[in-house]
Image (tube, rainbow, N blue to C red):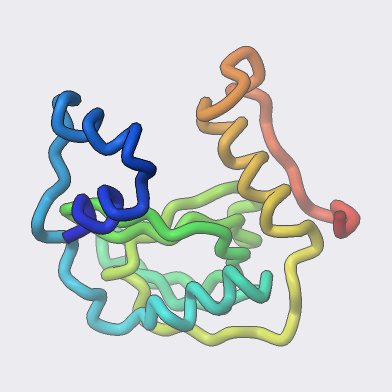
Length: 144
């Protein structure tokens, strides 16, 4: 289904490349998370609003966190919410199926979502690899 949507969106000149490349898009994604409302998380991303979440890690340890979600990644095994975590003062990737509660706050990110996404890309080596190990601190950053 995803591949067919991508195919329709591509210009004719690029469509032939889909069949030529060794590409595979799963027909099944991760099951919908039992508690996390992905539509609400997408709204928080669009509106650049913070979320308060209850999160259970792989050891079933529960924490309360305030996060700045800026992307959702869909994988066959899991759906991830990419966010800045105020508790850890760093980027974190939260499995949507481990979000046990979620509340959108009135408070907005102190930095715009596009800047946050670009810093995440740089940090994890999606852009300039020469600086991918540099620590990223966003606390107290003025809104761009």
